[in-house]
Image (cartoon, rainbow, N blue to C red):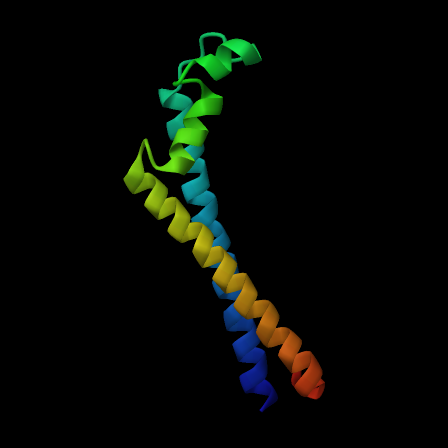
Length: 106
């Protein structure tokens, strides 16, 4: 039984690491896409940046709202959800095993 529990915990941990890698990839794609398409004229001056719809600050807000790059936003949101579900599952299973069957954990 301890082999099954150890394998389950190891599998969930590997899944969480893979989810983090996938989310890291999509986050990097979002950052580089938004930085590449943003207008950097006056981006360091807050009053100018907030008035420019294509400033880096406003581009991220428009991205979150779904106004720009809706396909990228959908993939990014799925990756973030995958991380949340993977880590939540890992922690719930390990916490349950800590309470119910601590002798099976390594």
